[in-house]
Image 1: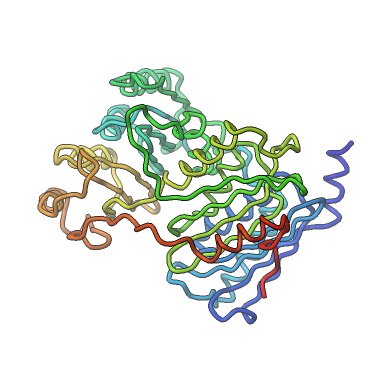
Image 2 (image 1 turned 90 degrees about the vertical axis):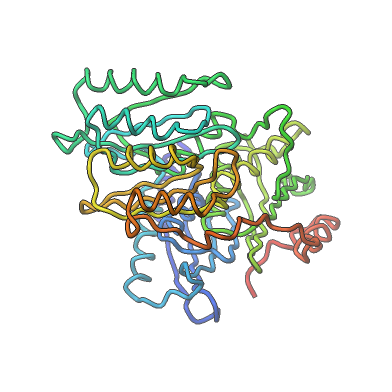
Length: 432
């Protein structure tokens, strides 16, 4: 009956999206109001992230039966959104997707989805793509993450002959056997996992977070010193029966989405929250409870929340060298490219593969085999092999990626501890 009542309330009070381009000089303000339901916050932020909008501020309130959130957003260049057609598209997408829900499995018969997790090692991706090429499988989309010696990938492939999903049971069985053999090589840390399906797909990045979390990539290896550059604090808010989580880290695109994915995977609900970014630093504060209605209740649980949030932020921090490949798509392209990377001593730490209209546009984040910056001479040799105009270096090749220096505790944290000291919701407020 509760579920029926919730659906009735949702239908009687459809999602309302208001876009304000006048109140803020530097950002477009998007206000979303709706009957509340589980997962709605993540779905809204997912839409904004998929549209490549940068969230500079956010105010979250989803306590009780209502969801009322405000987001300050810009484009990738830090500008307000002024295109009326795009603004209308944002509004329509938020209202439509928030009604139907995004995180369930969506039917797809166009391709076969491969999900895998394994111990990370040099050449792993090259071997996977080589197997797929031998099996006459064309990679149409893929995303690969590595973190803390673990690797996870979602790879969408089609049958080279039919151009559709792979349906032959013998073909699928052979693919499963050969990929399992690749994943088992030197995989003595944890058991690799492989799933091949043509029944449907989830949002790729949400699924990668789930896979990494299930593989416990947040657990630190014994003997490896951990020096996280992110500051996560978990405190009690006893009079309100919440747990207060604060996160301070280097700002980057999709940071809010990654944080909310981690909290959702741990089965926590965000009731209130504030997000502020300035000077390349991001501050996030959330008032949460577990889905059973209880706040964090033990030191072990508190530590787990800290470790999982740090892992979610680190999974695609992308401080490695970025290489972009643009060329005509063909069977075996990725096998050839990743083999060249491997032969020249490059390790792929993160990758995003996409094809459209017969064109391949692939992005790779790479280091050398020791996790260090790549020698520019090596990149020159690789470009000669692949093609000077096909492979482009993003950013300055001659400058090693710098780790952000620790700064003095910002005024945001000062305000946080002051507000918590008096046990109120000092930071939970509307925008001025």
